[in-house]
Image 1 (cartoon, helix red, strand yellow):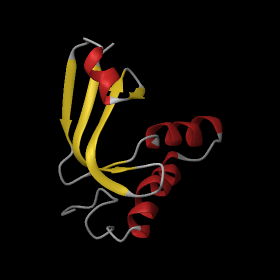
Image 2 (tube, rainbow, N blue to C red):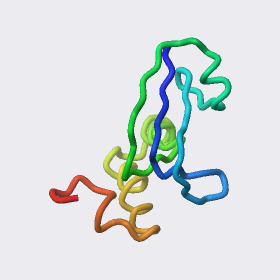
Image 3 (cartoon, rainbow, N blue to C red):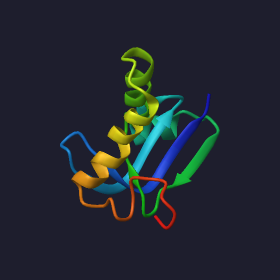
Image 4 (cartoon, rainbow, N blue to C red):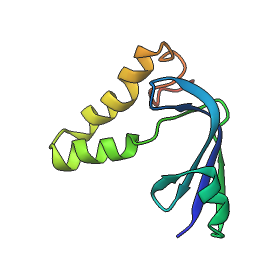
Length: 100
């Protein structure tokens, strides 16, 4: 097991807002900064500068596809295109279009 810190990204919080900061994981679990520092595990850092971090999105996709039977292309659109349009950043993010 290892620990991962995602730093400098715009993190989507429980209140539905974005704020710049760090998110800490041990294995697949989100933990507090204190738990992260105390773990003593090997560390990996991901710089998300200029990006958005939305905890739970991968689990959401997995459940939509594997448990609900939604086609992967539809699930990805729901998870990427629609949110990017909703917060007004689709011109820059939300798809794998060249130039974005």
